[in-house]
Structures are given as C-alpha cells and as structure tokens.
Image (tube, rainbow, N blue to C red; front, side, top):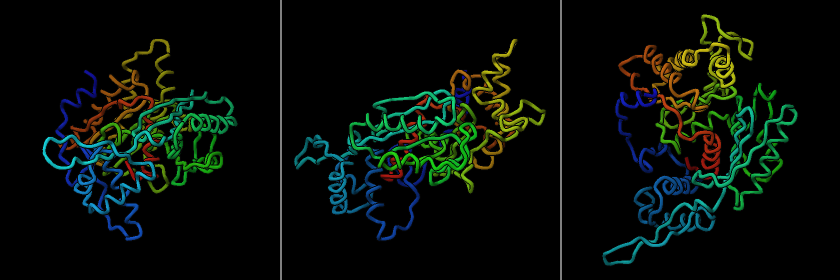
Length: 393
C-alpha cells in the first residue's frame, strides 16, 4: 500500500473549521477592520470570492452569504458585470408562486490568465488559463544551454501565450526557481546564474499587463490550497532540478523575513557525510533528493532502487520533522516525478516523521502526492493573479 494510502487510513479525522466559509472546506480570510476608503474594494473581493467558491447564486443569496445589504450587492454586481467579471446565468427553477430569481456567477471564460513555470531543467512551461484555473492552451520552450539565452526564451514564451489568449488578460503569473522578493526580484537563482534580476519589471516592460513573480514552490502551494483541497496548515515539497518548499499557516503564505522560508534544499541532513552538493557543502538534502541526484544514484551499477529511494525519503523526513513539530502542520504534499516520490520514498518519509515527532500530536500528519501533476506551478501562478487582481484565493 502506498505511503499516502497508509497515512490516509491511519490519520485522525480533520477537525471542523470554525467561522463562516466560502463553500466546502474554504475558510473566509480573517476579519479585519476595513477603512471606509477601502470598503468598496473589499466588498468587491468578497462577492467575487463567494462566487468563485460557491458558484451561481441570486443577488439575495449573495446578500445573505456576505452580510452585505441587498442595495450594496445590487450595485456591486452591476459594476462587476460592466467590468466583465460577473455574468447573469438565467433564472433559478422554481415550482411555487413568485418571480424566479436571476442567478449570477463569476464569468469564468470572460478573461484569461497567463501562467509560466520556469522550474524545470528541460523546458519552460506556459499556459493560458480561465479564471477557474482550467488550462485552455499550452506552449513550452527548451531551456537554453547558454544562460544568456534564458531571459529571451522566457520573453518569447510569454509573448506566444499572450498572442494565444483570445480574451482580455487579467494578468501574468510566473513561478521561478530561487529566492524571489515581494516585488518580483529574483534575489538568487544559482541554476540560472541570476542575482538581483528584476524579472517582474523586465517582463512588464515587454507587455503592458500586470505581472506577478514568485518562487515556484510558493506558487505551487497556492494551487494545492485553492484547487487541490489542501488544509490551511500545509507544506508542499517540490522536487525537480532542486528541492524547495512552500508553506501555508492558517491559510496564509509564509515567505520569511528574507523571502527564503521553505528553502530546505540546503539543510544538512547528512551528519554521516554524504554526497557533495552543487552549493559546495556536504550532506545537503538536495544532494539526495533532487531529481538529477536520484536518477544519478539509481543509474549506478548495482544500485538497489528501494534502498536509494528509502534513503532519500529518510533524509526528507529528517529535514521535515522539526518543521512539522514547530508549525504543527496537518499535511505534507509532495510534488515532482511520481515514479520516484511515491512508494518507498514517501513511506520512509512517513516513518522518519513518526520517529522524530511527538506521536500524540503528529502521528496523523498526512504525506501525499499532489494530484495536479506538472500543472501545479502554472495553476499556482493563476492563483497569484486571481489574488492580486481580484482578491480571490
């Protein structure tokens, strides 16, 4: 039985969430005092968030769900219809007397979002998505062997996607490897040779559209939360060319004071020595767990596949245990090559976590593979745009 299934069967039932929610399992963001000058924008986001998660409803339904007056809802819905974000969807079927209510919903096809995933070692991926996160067009380009060609390749891919949108574009989201600050500056991405590259501004100068850039694992955890059913306290470990992770606590992203939260790839997990990492240290998690490292170890003459994968899983468990203990996470999601991560590797991760955390509280921590495959960063980039432009997550 895969580790994910084992963990699923033994984990405790998820405690019910408190407070009002937007649909099943979607918690309303924390209530804060809204200044009068910000109230209308807040209320617009509230309406859009409600429709995004709950689907078509009448204006009266929206008033009851959001707590806003019917007059306010009527004004906001009219404004959102004019802006092209909401559309009327006919009338609700009724059997009794009275005028049937007109349903409204997010116009999920009315705008497009462009997503870019720069995290792979072989190809840069791109997609045109609906507001619902559905991919309607895909394009990709090979990663240039010469680092000088990386930015031109990204720009070329972005322009191709924009040309293929065939609808107004809400914005462009980019998931990049490396450490990325709040302004879309890639502070460091060693595999690209980047240091202090203002990727957001570079791309914005090429197209007159809103652009948001974030670390690829931080984008991926947003996709898992919005589209993958993850809980509010979750860590997503992304395994590819390197190893990184994205964190949510209470449904809010954790980026850290230096934007490096989740950078677990260069945590030393080999006190017994181990392979030399690309960073120059010995015993980094990435030296065991990155896709190139795993495939290299598996290709060695006489390599025991299960032993190699279990060793990598144990190292991951060693790195995760203090994080799970400190943050009281409910689940860990793995994203990367399924044939490597599922099975012995995930099982060893679970066993190590159980051995190194407080059993009474953390035996129920779930470790599972994402079901979103290689689209997870693209869909996370869409969530970035939805949140930044519409206040929807």
